[in-house]
Length: 583
Picture 1: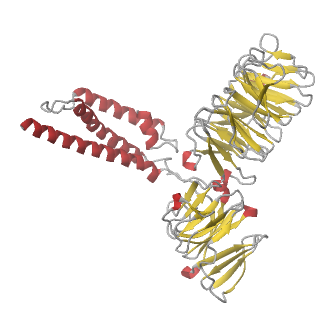
Picture 2: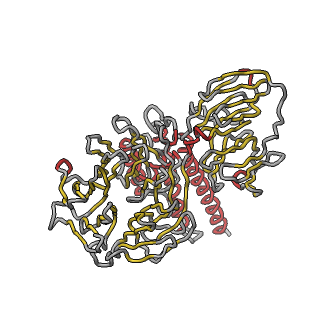
Picture 3: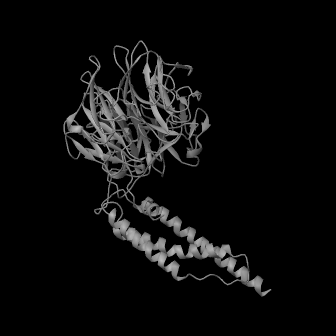
């Protein structure tokens, strides 16, 4: 009986310790939410006096705006300046705009009690229970839903929750209040007009959330993108070829390394199996003489020139020209001046083909078929190459980005892929961050985005980035991707305002140390719990922490302090990063 009593007491204490441990971990997980920076679209606020209730906002085709309040009507011209104001003759019915047709023809509405929201008659579960007050859509198909007390929810064209905008006292460009009373879209300028119950009138830049998220039926890494006849195709390194537009999949050829649109079909390079040609029905056939074991069996990068010669960069056999008669012309370190047999990127500029190898840059004249080295880049370790729409050549190195004209930008982590947008700006992915070089002539013209900015991918994969014909950018990860709609004239992508940081960058040092101490205090409890669970004998006394445990705690504290010091200047380093480093 006594043994049973001690056993029950120990079980109760053990469960209490475990509950406390879970609570501490839960609090630690919340710290980044309370302290880490969040992104907010830029919003310009017009604050009206006397807390007038904004009842309706209307935008015409000329981007002129009429705002109806509880006492007057305010007219804004196309420059967003107040052009006229007069007393309202009547109070409009506040329920008159419960439904609307979005830019893609779908019907959205909220019910008579304004409880929840419906899409083509079906309720949207993610907004169940919200008191909806207003609804509108942007040109890209996103739907903005205003609520009575919870700010603005943003849904994508597939009705998935894309973002949530709320008031924040720490963010000067956030919503002025969570009480939204009216929304209207100025699609011509990618703007959403916002009215609140407290009289605020705001202009929201919709480009701030201008990305789309997609998930494949495989978890394999995405290796390449291509567009053909307005349809988007995604290749993976093990899961075949996916037509995103139709949902069809071809897995007969699995290890696809690159895609190229050519002659109303797709060319797919593979690792070890040559090059295939896919029709719209995703039926593969061998392209020319590019079979398994040929010079292009380890193909990655492809460029088709006007004379129908396919130029192929390979993993270990250098550069190969596949001529129209299906013969090969090879450039490797044994028969040419190419800097390496490992090609990591290719691009066209000034009627020349730039070939980036793992150790140096080369230039090839596709007419004379002559290849030469770029002396300034010899022995430079490269990871990729991009030639912009303006003909500028950018190189991806092991530690950053550089151009042939002299600009250089160092990154904090290893680059993965590089491309440019229709404005000539540069986009670079690393492991799980996205960099935007928006003023290449200025040293400070670089902006870093992380998951805090809504990237929605756990990691980015090598070479998996592509500027598509519609000026969007496709970026790949492990079985998932995002489609980025970069602003052509915005000084920051998506129109996002400056991310607010503490003066020391990231979390305050005291918060780091406090979190580390809390985590360290929790460890002996976890160790005691682990030891207690290993014992099945009720009579055995509880295991006390020994000197090894104290030594382990001391070493862990020392490591935590070293990690904090090493990352104190990194504004994106938070408690979550500290936990991963300690583990």
